[in-house]
Image (tube, rainbow, N blue to C red; front, side):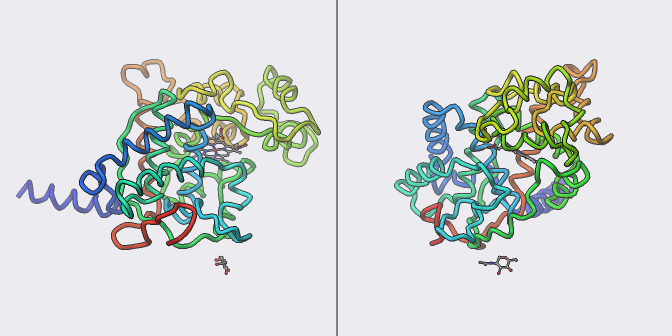
Length: 321
Ligand code: HEM
Ligand SMILES: *[C@@H]1O[C@H](CO)[C@@H](O)[C@H](O)[C@H]1NC(C)=O
């Protein structure tokens, strides 16, 4: 009786996770994960932006129509989702394409582009010294790419309430919002996203007073008013290439670079989540940032996925079959 109940229970969990499972390709394409990992590490060896770019790509894929590879479509149309304002600066498509080409050579029509994106994001985390976690796979690729579906991407100027609402719409909690924002532990931002925060905060002509006064002149020097909007700076000051909890420490002390990250400390619930990783006895008794981040990534990766016979397995990630 008890084993049966457990079986039923785990089937229910399976369904609620959209029928993704770890090692989905174990029989159909046993080297799938190895191939993705190799392509990602090769790309990372020649371009230090690779890991952050791929981590961000997964987020932007999942938040529009679910993790279905819709952001990868390049039909050369103005209506292509990838051209959406909310996807500004998203890159890494060439790396996904390269992995797909290699996968098609060994197991044609088998591994979805959406899964490649999810696996590449995991490999990116590992490459920057983050936690190694298993990625449930079995996603199928979507057949719609529509720029207006990306209108609702989270934006740096969104209030904390709006950010919470946008994550909640995807089934992601306040805790997930904090943990997933902590992906900003690696990577860079264009000064473009800093201009209002530094020179016209809330359209008031000044700067965001939540920026530590020690940090403000440094930010202004890196991103001068009317300077190069494409100049880039690390989002996690002092630790932009390593996956660690420094980003949370920076958020606590007014050294957040992005406005949306700073706002995580202006709300009681999200502030508590940030602080929970710094409690006195945290190393022994507290929650683990790395383990919690990995769980949040797995959860984000289940957003609105297509499985079974839904969608398709694209032959080329940038176009529908
Ligand atoms: C909470 C809402 C979020 C907002 C408003 C936001 C906004 C941004 C912005 C403005 C940038 C700079 C883009 C550029 O200049 O190229 C950025 C970069 C980045 N974002 Fe987010 N983000 C959010 C959540 C996330 C999540 C959930 C993830 C992944 C789990 C993520 C991963 C990244 C990474 C890794 C970068 C660095 C990209 C690079 O170096 O090219 N972000 N984000
Ligand atoms: C995109 O979606 C919008 C809103 O759902 C719809 O009005 C529009 O017709 C769609 N455009 C294309 C090209 O499918």
